[in-house]
Image (cartoon, rainbow, N blue to C red; front, side, top):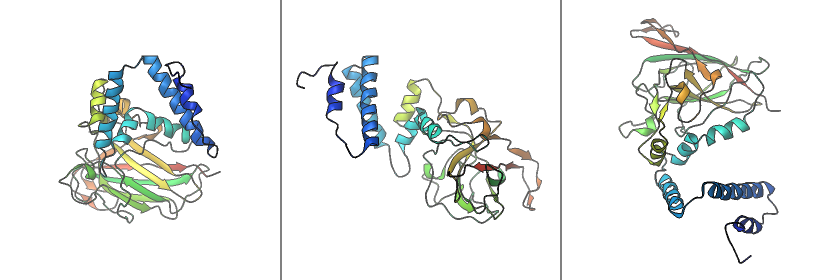
Length: 287
């Protein structure tokens, strides 16, 4: 096809795709091309706007580093991350819902023993967290691997700040033989996602805030069950209805109970006010 115009360009591109051994890749490529071309036609994209889009994506790439994944952030604020997670994690009623993974997970977090304090000196109110891991039928899930990470009491992750050396407010532990777990850390606060880069400029252009409500990340793996990636949110947080990455689910909102100074759940005396959280996770078995 030599006489390419705005009406036949899509079919011309599609006709050149030949992936006979990978039907799924063919489906993805053709769908992407068709929707991109349809978008350009629908909004009557100008050359200047197309150039701006290329510049934006180039800048997103330049902001990516081992400490910061701007493309994940972009996917999050566009709601794409939440959409992909929702359609790939449909579960029976009663299972704990999945939500966005986020850009701040670290693969080699320290191993924790039950009751460990993994805040590593981070600022914030002392927090004692307990819970249990079960299956959808109520059965105990023994020895599940629980990966935990969160921001500190100033709304900052360890990987974000140059003045923070080493890992803090993150760790990996095992539930016990009855599925129970217990750890100590500090209460995380709400925070703004990184807004000094192109994703921040995008939010500003849309008139959107960059805030995320306070939350605690969990990734739970257990033999015979689907992996769970989720958050637990503070029911008193003011940003629950405006989460910039669309990660809040009603079933993941919990009571972060405040306590006056006194005896903490681990039996120690806490000389300052502290919080507790008790939250159980229900895993979906692999069929």
